[in-house]
Image: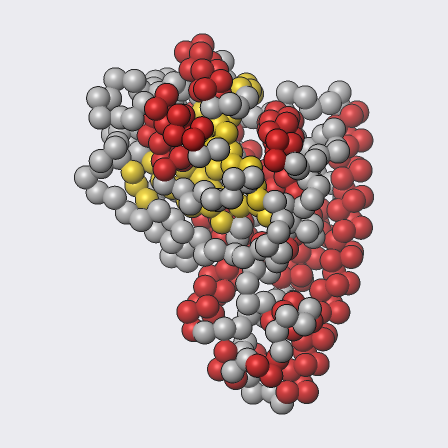
Length: 405
């Protein structure tokens, strides 16, 4: 029976979309009567095209009993990203989400497509809430089908493509118009998509099916408590990191056509929403991720003037005045260059300070976890074990014995 409230999880959802971000897709069974577009977070091109790719999609039960795990996941998204970013060589990371409930609930599935713009993903997730359920099995079959077929997976054969199915109830196997999970898992295998399962709670029926899904999906099965047992420790460095993260965001200047500038406005609004509403700990984790090589795509994305000019990829004189950031359009070229130089120097200093504090924060957390007896049963560790082993198949190497917290 599902009746608890949501308060923690891999990702957060709401019944409705938000003004800044793309519309959410409500998916019924195989052929629902009404289908809205999949959420498409604006794509962000990686700074380097040769980096290995990691595409990770969470298929997450968002019914009432999953509240604790969902809130935990909201808090841990940046740690998960930082954990994946520890690989050598540094990968390009994209995340996506399939939130699912059941027929008769407010929605069956809602799909957020893969994107390297994790700020916009996170801003959308912040508005999700767990609700519904209470009647046992859920639309797991539909969730897996959408995770495989409604997501813009990388076409590169060496990309690490993975689904984490997270829930506490088994699938409905009595819906006649469903595509059952064995068929979907065959399609996943043909596309090189690994499917892992994480069971919340101790339901025996769920355990049996989750183990079958993981085995057929060439993945791993893990079980966590209803809250996820995620490591959640505040550190003396969090407040400073959160402050520096906001300052680092303020060094960004975007240029381009009206359409590009509108996309970037939404990206900046997503970051502002995060700074206003996310916890200090979450913002500190984001700062740590953004300071990594993999985090650069999330921090800057495309058409960021300071990085493009400072790196020599773009000549300032080649940009039409109307395509420059509004804040510097009226300036003389010398003044524009001075602003860009100042922003670049400030950014470099902030990144160095963040890297130093992030390392101190990491050491602090490792000691605290060791003092508490370890965290081998946590959501953090169980996901890391799967990522470390499976990403190794495409040549990604993880030296650390523990995930980022």
